[in-house]
Amino acid sequence: MKRLIVDMDDVIADATGQILHYYEQEFGVRVPRESLNNKEELEGFPDHHEKIQQFLYRENFFRTMTPHVDSREVMAELNKKYELFIVSAAMEFPQSLPEKLAWLNEHFSFLTWKQIVFCGSKAVVHGDYMIDDLPHNLERFNGEKFIYTAPHNMHIHLYNRLNSWKEVGDRLL
Image 1 (cartoon, rainbow, N blue to C red):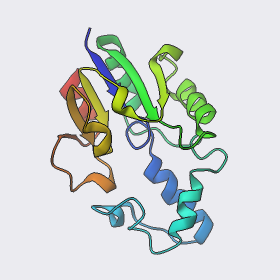
Image 2 (image 1 turned 90 degrees about the vertical axis):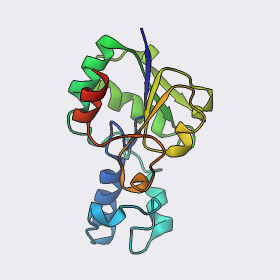
Image 3 (image 1 turned 120 degrees about the vertical axis):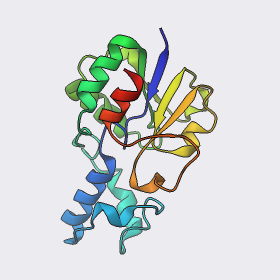
């Protein structure tokens, strides 16, 4: 059975949408998702960059993210075909660990605890396929690399691109 590694934030969970929501709640300004395209993660916001980073340390930030459309259904099917692992470089945000685990248990209850890996660096991960939104996580991966579209990576053309979970299913199922 082939091994598939799937990232969490901005791949199965809409981290960008969560930041946009927090920004609007905090500053009363709605920032369109499209305004973030082809920019580093914070450049698309008009101001308050230092405060945006603090959102990631707030209680329930990771716990209340929305799953990406079709991610649950496609992941359930992938779980039948692959040795599937969720790998999240979560150590920078220690409070995220229980939140991410609770989120996965709620939204992806078909996964077992043995399929969830929280780490500091994905450089140690190996497998046949990896889906991630950050190019630096894909660089050292030994298998086939897929970049999952997020505003901050639209200018990257080094990897096979997946724009939606429907495309993930079409490509890997």
